[in-house]
Image (cartoon, rainbow, N blue to C red; front, side, top):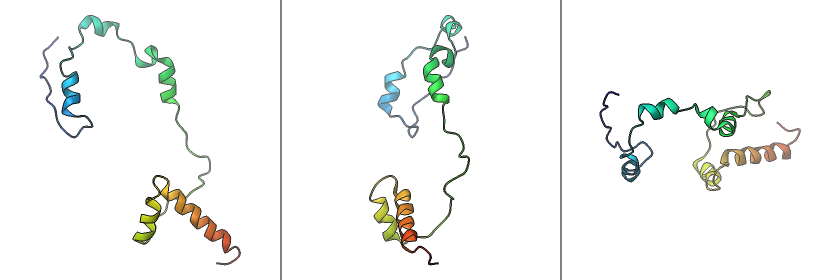
Length: 104
């Protein structure tokens, strides 16, 4: 096996220097170990199947992507409620539309 240049820690990749230090002394896999390696889906079939299950495309999209300019106060008010702020704006607009039924 050819020797490889050892990598150095580079910040900004989602792990810390402590994380790097904790695993940096792990030995490289030997040829015999690599020969015994199995594909992930074979070693962990249930986990691989769960990872494959993703939501498909909507048959008929229920929402339309748009770009809209709102006042800063409105956006800050809805964002202050945490995740789901866009859905809350949609709900508020739906209520406003329902209250004006029949009017443009």
